[in-house]
Length: 163
Picture 1 (cartoon, rainbow, N blue to C red):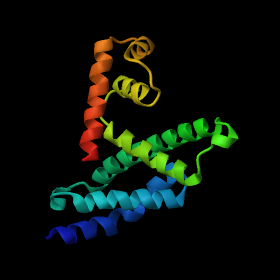
Picture 2: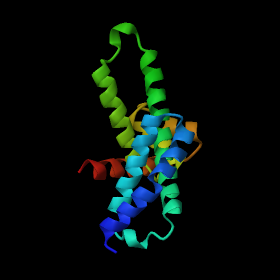
Picture 3: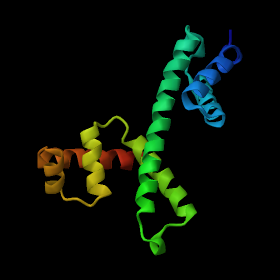
């Protein structure tokens, strides 16, 4: 059977099931639709759809990853919006600037995906908070050499993603 028929079969046979599962988790139909669509984009992109022997297990794995990234992005957005809300009224960014910043934050988060929590924190303290390596080392209770390594790793990931 060719790949297109396999993907079509998985889509027709399992889309309603996946959508229902995601709707139960998100309690939002539009968000569930978006993540369901993204899951099937990944099925289409699979190098050998015929090798997918357990479609529901495969879709569950994809859905868990998508949910994790969705919730992570929600957390980032909430943290950013809280920091914006704390600004004086005359310095508030425009709605467009807020949207651009949220997209940039999500992209940086994706680029840093795979770094440890400590490494991400060191990088963000350096680049966002403007902290010195000494301050970061004290706050995270790690060596300055580790801070240097983590910041360099974060910069490498961001530069690789920018190209």
